[in-house]
Length: 175
Image 1 (spheres, one colour):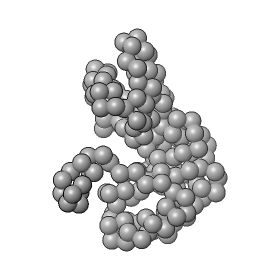
Image 2 (cartoon, one colour):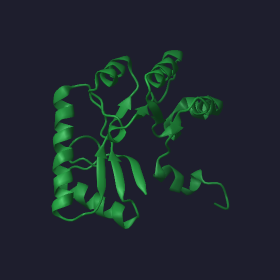
Image 3 (cartoon, one colour):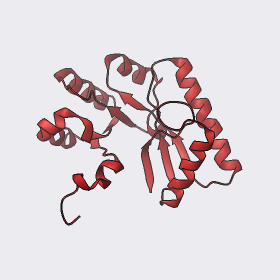
Image 4 (spheres, helix red, strand yellow):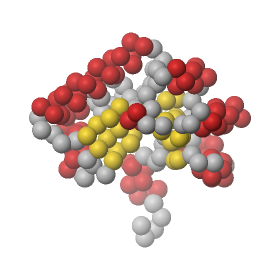
């Protein structure tokens, strides 16, 4: 199994606080059947932040190898959709998912305007494949579920947080 959205890097964002926590998270993932992860720290449009994330990724990679923890990790970013971040994507500062054509895109939680949709299509026009992060959080999809359907029909992918799926209140009876 591949986890495509996790904040595993030590001391980078809202994920693991330190290297030991990252290591414990990796071991837990392996125990649950995950053998590959794309680590996705939040993208911050500053070179020094991106350099720090890369350094922490390399540290974690070395640690996993040295301790024979057989978890394959690659680097990506969770990128909030904004004009400034669009430029960072185009310039190569933001990471795609494991050096692929896939981008993990986070939408604004409470609003979705026509220009956001235009940004998504612009990314597609440049050859990127869009994964919309944690779709259960966005008001637009709660109020207008057909909007998500339209985006998926246009070739975008939707990611749901596993915790959301596992919470009883979010499941239909019988599942």
